Length: 168
Length: 431
Image (cartoon, rainbow over all chains, first blue to last red; front, side, top):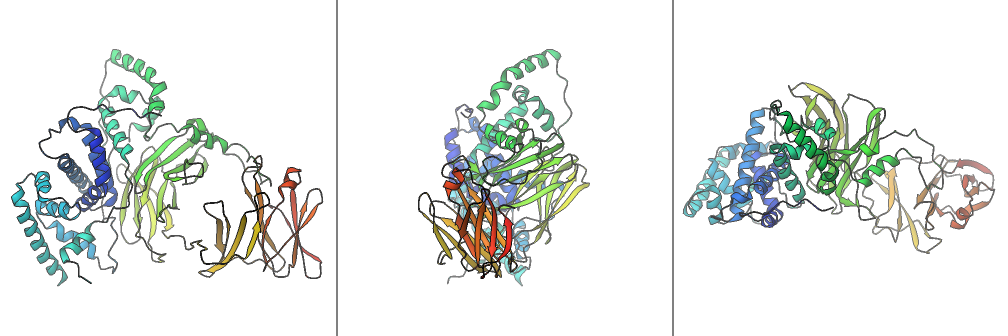
């Protein structure tokens, strides 16, 4: 059977979107999971994000990298998913595995991350899980590349302090 | 060993790795088209009327989102034009569609498999007791659930039965059968009409050794979403579409853990009422890994046609006794473990047919165990031919001569004798 071809238009080439999806899928999913707090919903968010990217690929102007543009869509999709999840008020807990020692450490970690400013948290996720360079992170977060380093430093310092407080 | 930075440690704990998951690009394209269809009614009408009617209330809805508003009025002329377009598209839309939507008709091979359920088993050398056929309407088989899982796409195909129930097949695309086609997942039938929650939990071993757990089933018609609830408080939310749900249940890799939480599926109506609840049991990896590397076979025979070795391994594992038969030409073996021990004068030997009766390469094996007082075993055919079957430490692995089968002789009875030659046990073959 021949798949129905989605017409290529100006903007982001469909095959380039697919290549990025296939190459970076674990990172897209992991960052989404960190944002949402649920791996199942993270998978769904990434699939939705790329469906959006496919539909809106003509809107890609080439002003930044395609990867950066895709990361923006994925992050927005994950945020939407998180908002829906919270608005529903149905969620009791995450589906992430509890910590091995059974002390609810994973819950504490999530709580600590939630105390960080959104930009710091995202910068950390993009750096740690996706290994993006500062320029790419800057594009995704729409900040100057020079501020990424300081944002990351501030995030790590704040986290370290918060983690120490939690553990004492 | 270098100690992990506490921030890195926290990041590791925050989100699991998805490194070994497979992409599902087809699902991305499917979603993109589905979104286009929502904006373009003509494309939606390109789907069959039945699927549109069935799926419109649920399709494409995200968990927690409100239902779509009621229909808008459309001019009669527009309706007529769209209907004409729908008729024109209906014959070709699915033929061109490679990707699977919830509600899509099943491909011909899936429909055939459903239809085969109504026929008595074909090609069996040893007839089995006839079960009542489910009266499944294979031609009406559709995708009831589609999942982008960690191992790629998974489909639940469902066909209605004449009695108002359904039969289902779970297709895990990543599992490929000997003929190169997608396989795995299994299936079953609930032939009668039911408003109850009928859920299942199944585990499948993937080629890379990982274990895939799936929870799926049919819900009462009022259900709009499902929750997989673990005894430790974790909840996984799952959408329900067209009365079906399908979810992957992820577990950490590792050995069998008796503390693995018990799982219950709860289904809820749109207003949050619980309309069904069913315990699915404990999530445990199978306790037995039928790996025989390093073990010595108890019995080795040569196949009658190609003279290749066929080996029976018997070993203890976790307090149970396991037996595995391996053939050089097979990718895997067949076997299992249990605590059953035959009584002193019991014959616990079963026929195992490999291949269809019409295939000249068909093999009929007899394998199993006999009780401790049975010193020798013989196979009797329906024409009174008798053949001795060797017994090794109480175990049997024997291939019925294909020449007997070709001559129309049917193995009918196993007879056990004690050390003095007296008959002390009888068992029908396949009985």
